[in-house]
Length: 142
Image (cartoon, rainbow, N blue to C red; front, side, top):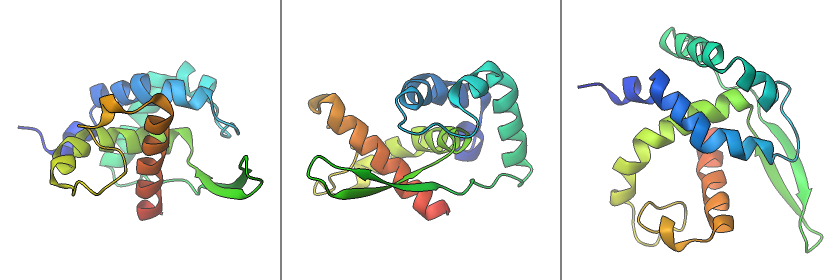
């Protein structure tokens, strides 16, 4: 049986994370990464292989987050942190493996992304919850 590490950073899991989460979300970004979606997607196979090699070799480190403030409709500022595309892919690969294990153990009072509540949420709530999950991981890894 494969370990969580092997499952998270398998080529198949990383491609799934790209197709399901990154590809669509990155297109909607307010601010594009230095290496934008199109560049990364053009060499997707090579980029995934390079990331896996760096992770397995102990040479992968998340890039510094781009921190900025976004104006809310109430004219207040909302601070956000934007990870690089490569880091999003790594985070989503980890989330796909860990969330099904962790979710059943969470209290019902937890308001963040939850598997059993997913079908009851509208798309905007899902987007906010997925962003929150990524942000929590980013802050812990930074």
